[in-house]
Length: 461
Image 1: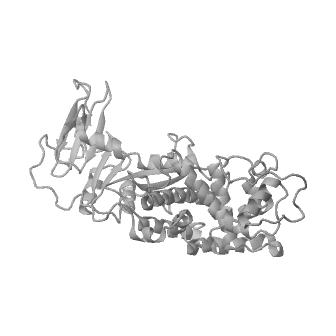
Image 2 (image 1 turned 180 degrees about the vertical axis):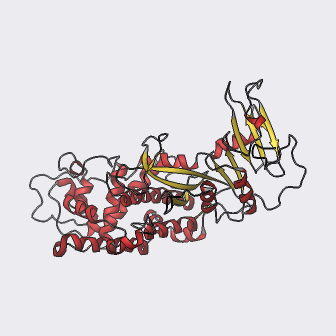
Image 3 (image 1 turned 90 degrees about the vertical axis):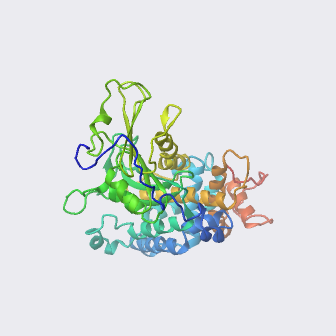
């Protein structure tokens, strides 16, 4: 019997027949039919994840805040200008300049020409100042029942789009993200094991093979009243995997439990994960290390669950629980459960690593803006996964295909606004970019500098 006297373990696997519907995936992994029919170029891969109906909410709220702050001086934003603003954020991430001063990016001597050719520094700062995701006039009433009220509508609509465009493979990873943030927030978390320690926690379910972010959920802390939620970890996994069927869920010891495995089996899902030694489900023999040789494995079974205790080195014990296997098998010196867990546990961690490489996050004290920056980063990576799924032979052999994708996405977003510019920048390289995009062969306006002009450069990293 287990420590809680609720689970009966055996040293011999069950002879009952396996569940017929377990791990039978009914959806074909990869981009869905909707994504394939709508993704024709790099910009369209971005638009399917952030359509105009979604961005229109941000545009209306930003214009409302701009009129409130600047009164009659506010120039109404349109969708083309919003694209240009997002494109500059992406280009700053491509150049790894998200932490660089804006004055440095717009510098005529040491800055990037594409920034001055798109819009002025003052215009960019004004947009950042009033960038909003809801109407603040009605926020107080909504915040009484929802801590995420400042960005709830935008967040829910965006998360709703993610599973409609991509079908995950047989393995899905459930883990947590921590977005660094030290400002004021009603649900800021302190996690000493993370590099940033302070931030906003997000639960994520990602495809283990491609790290496509399939479902996300912001952790807003304890519910109203301060009473901790019971079985919080199990509820998170069940919510994130609600629309899955036939998949295997890989999770760490924060989520793994015997009850979670049983609930997932009812939904035709299996589970592989590490489990803490102080949990009530394992048998006490699994935690004993006396006379256990290195690389030894101890298996225990129920009718549909396998528990393994593995000793990787002296005085070290690892416990894993799985509903995927009915029998314990050894490959080399390690159990098959551990090999599968190691192969599929990094879906969310790999997403964090890839997103951080070309992140568009900028320093801010507004937590809704922090969440939106993370949305932009994940959107760009998911769009890259969709683009490669539709065009697997795009730029073959290139080691930095994602950087090239991000660069082309940023240029595609800023180009429509550059085409509408009436005043050419004073700096020669920025002016050359504007003339090239506008397709003008004639001489520029009177602000064009005199003397020999440099050749028209290509926008590149």
